[in-house]
Each structure stands twice: as C-alpha cells, then as structure tokens.
Image 1 (cartoon, rainbow, N blue to C red):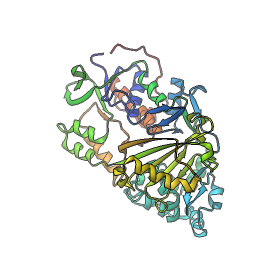
Image 2: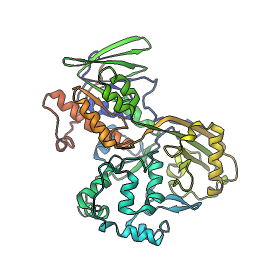
Image 3: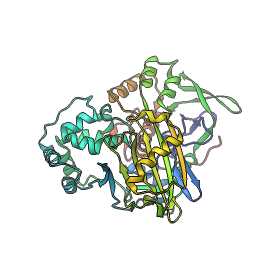
Image 4: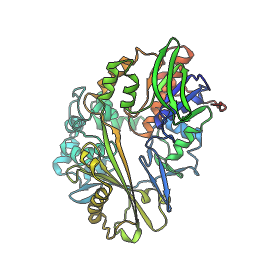
Length: 478
C-alpha cells in the first residue's frame, strides 16, 4: 500500500480503533507505530499461571459502538469474553476500614459512609438551583450539587484513582460530561437519572464489566490484525507536509527512510508528540498541546497464597480517599474479579500509586513502592506474609490531566486544525481516557473521515451514530 487514504500515526488503542472502523468501511489505512508492538500502554503479561495487565485490566461499557465492534470481531463470544461477576461489591476506605459503596439510590441514603448531615445534603440535591460556570472544577460542581462530604469520600477517590486526576483542578465539563449534561437539561442530577430510567434510555450490553480470556491484549491483537489495517511497527513519523490534495508524511524505519502520501492523517500520539509534529506548521497548536499535563502512575502486582490473605476479598477492590492515604489510590482484587488470572488457591492484587495527588511516588524505587503497599495492605487485608511474586509497571506519562479550562483548550485546538483540512487528533487527551471512550471516539472520527473522503462534507452528530457500514474487506498488501 503506497498511498493509502488515511495514515494513522500511533498504534495504541485510539489509533487502532480509528483504523479498524475505517478499514471496515473499505477505506485504505496504514498505521505507523514507533514501538515493536502495538497497543501503547495496554499489554498483558503471563508468568507462572498469573496474568497481569500493564495498564487497563477491564472494560466498563455502555456504548453501542463498543458492542458493535466486539460483535464484529468475535470478542463478545463466550470463549473470548470474561464478564465480571454480577453484583460484586466495591469498597471505599474510611477511617481505616473498608465500607461497601452503595449501588442503588436507597442504599446510598442508608449507607454508613455518610453522616446525618451528609445524607440530608444528598436529599436536598433536587432543590439546588442549576448554575455554575463553564470552567467549573469537579470539586466545585460536586460541592454545589451534592455537598463536600460526597466529594471527599466518594468522588475524589474516583477522580484520583481511575483518572489519576485532581478534582480541585479537573474540569467538570471534561471529566463529568454526563452529570453536567443532566444538570443542564433537567436542573437536577437525581431528576435526570429518574427521567432516563423512566424513558428506559439504556444501551449497555448484558455484560457491562468484562475483560478477555487472553487479557486486554486480545483487543489490541484483533484490531491490529483486522483485514484492511496495514500496521507498520518500528516506524516513526518525523515530518508532516500539507499537499494540494492531502498530506505527505515522512518518517524512518529500521530499513530506511519512508515517505507516503495520504488524503487524511490522524495523530494518535501523546500531546507532546503531536505538538512536535505540528511545530513547523502551527506554533499556537503546538503551544496548546504542550499545555496538556500528564500524571505518572506506578502499578504494583502482588501474588500470594490464599492462606496468607485472611480477608474474604468478596468484591472488586477498593478506592482510597486522599484523607486516608495520598499515595495509594486503589487496589483491585484481580483474582476475585477474574479467577483465571491466578492459579488455584492463589491471590492476585493490583495496587495503584501516584497520580496527580502524589507525584512524589514517581521517584520511589521498586523496593519502596512494594514496601509501602505492603505496609498499607497488611493490616487492612490481614496479610501476614510477604508476596510470593511481585511485578511493578511504571508509566511516566500515565494519563492526561483534564485540568483547568480544558474544554476551552480543546475547542481552541479544534479551531486551529480547521486551517489544516485532513489533519485529525485521536488520543486519550480528547474525549475520555477509558478504552470504551477511545473506541467510541474512534468510531465518530472514522465517520467524519469517511464522509469527507466521499466529498459530501462533515456529517451532523445525528447522522453519525447507527449509519456506519460494516462490510468486510480483503487484506491489502503493505
């Protein structure tokens, strides 16, 4: 494939998702990945009967686009997918004890997590007038609508854990778009949730929380091997040049320099990488992209004999508020969620350190990280012995931080890119960090590119969903 319709620079889940949707629409697409293997931070490790994930370990899905992709690839088959046990408890750390997270409105009010004052504040939410600034932070939004107690005990650990962010700095509009939208439309979060249930607005598949039998790398393998996706590993883009009818992309590979022309280019690399490529073209876009910060993360996997852990581990794990422990953001009980990821009579725990609230852990060596995790987990889970196996994964630039007036930053970048037709951004600093969001955003971008290639202009949002053709194509020679 010498001159494809589209070149995707970056073979992580964002870039591969765009490429997969395009290829299934019959669009010729190349993916340039600078590493030997695609997937970005997603990688599955198997050793001595244990299966550990370098980054994401599961998916939480409620998007129809994701369900369609899983069905088309066969990843939704019982032999490929592994759903998490239903009604599994989740916990929050409170005063050194694990307290179940209430999953229903009634249980929310009755939960011992909240004081009487906190419960009354929750009940008052429907009577709080809507308002707030467009640049409101997560903390400001939650305190205004639900009170400080819910922020500190529940929302802060969620923002600091899975998102590695700081609610005092994170944009509510960027991080909590669904809640912000509920307030704007219904004037209340509670009324909005009730209205959605009343109207039965639910599109989630049967198994909302799941992983794959071969680990999360199974998703990467399927996307990268899809017919029509031409993946070039160890190929690094170094220069973009606009042409009359597209783009010229130059780069280098182990066997020499490469130059390819394409009608569209998708930059699916971290913000700093995109900024470097845009530097000769647009200094303002470069500046905006370099202003996107990232949080470092350390993931510590611990393996034990079941007899060494005296806690029942009946649930998915727990999150940690900053008032309890600023460095440890959470612990996932992997062998309880997915028993096949550990040998029989063994336990696998995955702990998360760092993020925006504890950047100092970036400088901790492995022994200090392991020692700190064991000091915290030992009393909490009644662990009496050292772990049998340990794996440590580090992410210097783990997750993008949606801090400040983030939505305004993205709008400004989008406006700048209007000067460069055929150039697109697709990465986890745009539209959400979860794998679900990356697949859904890849779908939307592929739709826009497909329509642009057809010469009919940009589709309206109402046109995008539900109209993507899913015809098979044969693999092209690369």
